[in-house]
Image 1 (cartoon, rainbow, N blue to C red):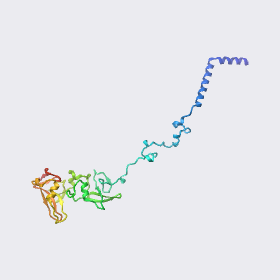
Image 2 (cartoon, rainbow, N blue to C red; image 1 turned 120 degrees about the vertical axis):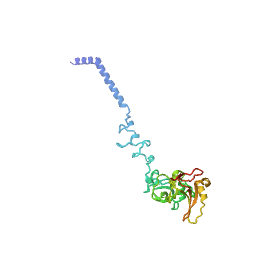
Image 3 (cartoon, rainbow, N blue to C red; image 1 turned 60 degrees about the horizontal axis):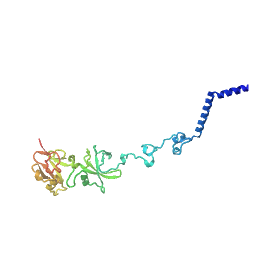
Image 4 (cartoon, rainbow, N blue to C red; image 1 turned 60 degrees about the vertical axis):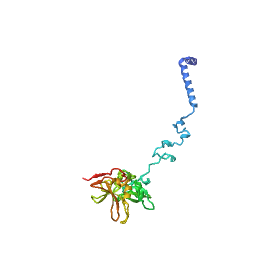
Length: 283
């Protein structure tokens, strides 16, 4: 019996299929040995918590991954303190400077919309300089005049003492007024007179005279000819058929440029020079 088993095993050993099986088993063992000695680098990509490299050891388990400063977003709790992104200043922290426009509640508004105040300067010893106001508007002190409704007002806001242009009759300013006297829009701020209704009007409206200078007392001496010629920038002799100089009497005498005949002025004559006066005939 034993002899027969031995002979059968020898025949099986010599069979080609058996040789193939042995070869496959031998190769599988060799591969397993290579895998056993190959270094484990899974920690380099952060996929194995137990083999993570030192560069990834600070990543909190289940927490947000800190963003680099170049990719930090506003609102991320991980923005580095030394590279923080500044948020826009709130309106209450904006500095009040010349050119700032304010509404009736003393809140900042755009100057292209109706506003009650326009800051033109800072207070000097608690007062506001009207000469500074004229310069802000683009005028020249001692030459340019403003309507009585246009005045300077001292305001205190957010710890700042400022001076603002305002309409004392409660009206609003429809546009930014910085430099406005150098444009035709500035006529609305200049003082003119309409004898047809015996009332002061804006020079942007039809009128019969324009006020050039105002005295401070009944006995004030005014050289109206010189003041008018300085105001228009040319001798009055070239305009004698259209305009003439007039001096009113009263508590506060005025120098005026009046239109002749049955005409009205439709705009200011400030800086007119030798140009044709803006005159329109009455119907």
